[in-house]
Image (cartoon, rainbow, N blue to C red; front, side, top):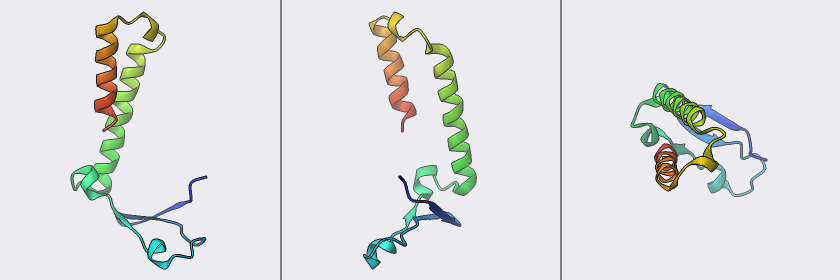
Length: 85
């Protein structure tokens, strides 16, 4: 089970009350680089875009993966790999 996450501004840290290592308990992650410095708004836009692309992919491929030829399957897998970044 994942520990609860506390968000203070844009620095994210896990609830570390159960950890005895003080250095580990003090660890924080700056997530700004993941959203090109866009802060919380950038994160929301990133998640909204990912949800939209996922829904579009699912609508186009649901129920027909077994019917795709090699080229179509390759294109679908490449699309998934770029969406996962």
